[in-house]
Length: 214
Image (tube, rainbow, N blue to C red; front, top):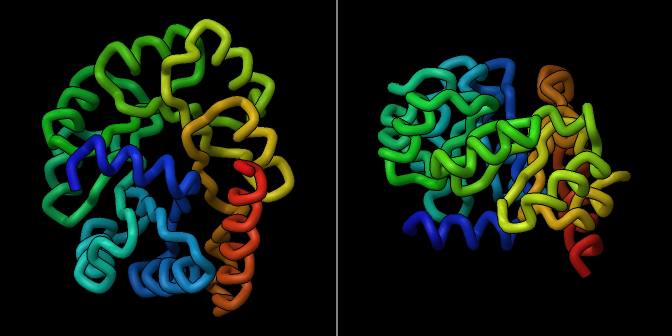
């Protein structure tokens, strides 16, 4: 799947689960629970222990049946490593020129992080396919709506502060997708072995996305 096709797939799903797993084993179980609930957009963050090995395992097990990426990239060499591990897309919470250049060089769908109008425009100018608005919890949907005023052509994806109750508000601003972390898949639930609850939340989020998008 090329970059353009991957972007369309992310838009189609509308939801990426941002996973900061407590351990490699529990992270894989978290993903299995999310998939069971219907969430097929998976972002494994580099803050997850042995993140690249986790992605390799998930890539082998699920292949193209899920959209698998790596997030929280902060070092240029992580872009190449993530691709080799099997990632389909790359996400960073920041927009650092050398880092973004390496993400783009991978040929994978790239999402650089930004918050202020200047940062959003810079990320897009650097070549980011989607600009990750982070932390979304600070400004909320109203802030993204304000950003969309001068930048209606920039694809945006808020992460942080996204939950089932406010997801419709986020989509109403015109974002291409949302990233949901602890509200969707809390690490504590995995530690407690409550994977059925993660699946339940996943199903709820998927239904909300469908309803919010009409």
